[in-house]
Image (cartoon, rainbow, N blue to C red; front, side, top):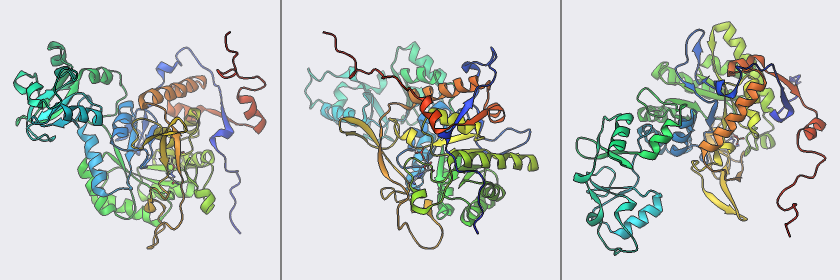
Length: 503
Ligand code: RVP
């Protein structure tokens, strides 16, 4: 007969936090959301940490280069999706690592022989009004000038005018040398009243621009997650099939942390992948594994050498694994049991392995609950797919702006390695859907608001750090009738359509 888990399988929406004592020191400004990303020994610091407890899902619709830079700027990490060729995934990682904080690579390059008409078209395509004029019109060409919107007036000039006739030529430009620091670049910008500073190498090739507006925003991001060369920290997903080729390519591209991306991680395939990485790189390459939902699964991956362990099966917003295969566990119950296993393992071995609650975060307070249940950080797909920086399309559906969001197990992504159970068989049925999510604007605005809610709740619970919340949070189950009580009830909520129109 089957073994039965005593506890029912529960989700975050079935719980609430009960406030603890808040003293005058316990204010949102004093909350510290720093959390470990990879395992560490008692008394030591982890080799990698996050400044906010959020990472973006290993999905085609979520984690590309732009998302990775935007999230690292806030203090989190993106895991660039692995369901693409090794070359294109490594190129994405390399692009993130080439984006030094405050330095912007140019994707608007034009030749001096091009025309004003070409300039207008390029601006429409990239959205950028500053263009590098290079000898061959390519990114790696010699810089011969720049064009900004101050250099031309469409209403007064012939569209066939050549770029070389109206650009600001190189000899009139103030430029920075390749090894310039961000603050030196900023001094030049201020001293010469510039809007942008081109940075060139010794062969006069453009390496980056530093924009006046970006320097200001860099100052606004104290949580930026950077490596020792001031480059953004970035992760990448791998699978248990082509790791011997994929991992070296990602490591060469400069990836900081890997994660085996699978819907079900309690398998010999994950152990073999971890073993190969340890044999090849020792502890130098950091790699997470998963997903698991109980103590047994956690132990297995911990002993196999995972640097962090991901929790959750079937809770993702686009996931139909539970319906299709009948496997999975409520996200709250799974997180709690794995966190208890993590603590037990720490007591026994002195090694702390961070756990990540992956999928099923619907409301911002679910993040706080996941942390209270013992997660060190959370992975989100739907949440990030709504933002401008996600690599998915923005479309209009019935007059509403939506972003496309599809599961890795959907017919659209066809990421069969994620659902791999060995053998030659490829996906014969889907485990995910293709969907829309409402467009929500920029990552910066949304993450700021979400974390403000997390910090306020932590203060209500009397906790200033995540370890403090994990240890001291008080949690209660809610009844279905008390859920009704939690929303606006027994009133007619006013909105524009209801309000009487003034006469
Ligand atoms: P959510 O944040 O609820 O959208 O969930 C995202 C998570 O769902 C991913 O991190 C992954 O674990 C899981 N996922 C991705 N694709 C699929 C699928 O097609 N079933 N599931």
